[in-house]
Length: 130
Image (tube, rainbow, N blue to C red; front, side, top):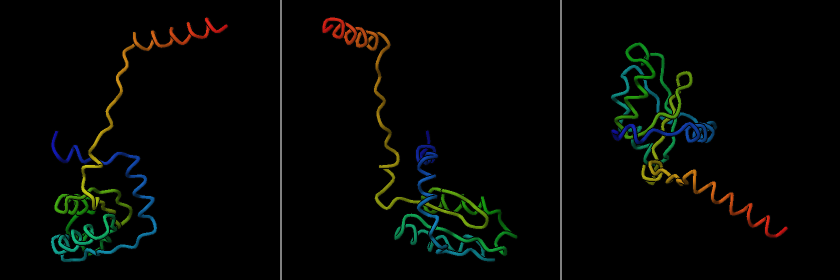
């Protein structure tokens, strides 16, 4: 599994981030010069804020697709694309690092036989009380 596959945000996380970003205004605009010129600014804003919106002007869309721009910015800034709505791209990079978002909770494995024994013990205790 590559680093990119590990870093994939879950649907719940994206939904929460979209809700947080709803009231935000775009802090970076991409114009006719393309996305190459704004990578440093996007990186700086992500470092300061963590969650930002980027506005793509129509002139930039003549040369690149908005989804390509979003992926390029995310890859170059070590961020994740939360959403692309209209001409606005929402990007996220945690300020405290990706470790918190990569950690998976360990699943508790209970064998079927153990579960049956637990149920039987509960039933047995109830029967003795009555």
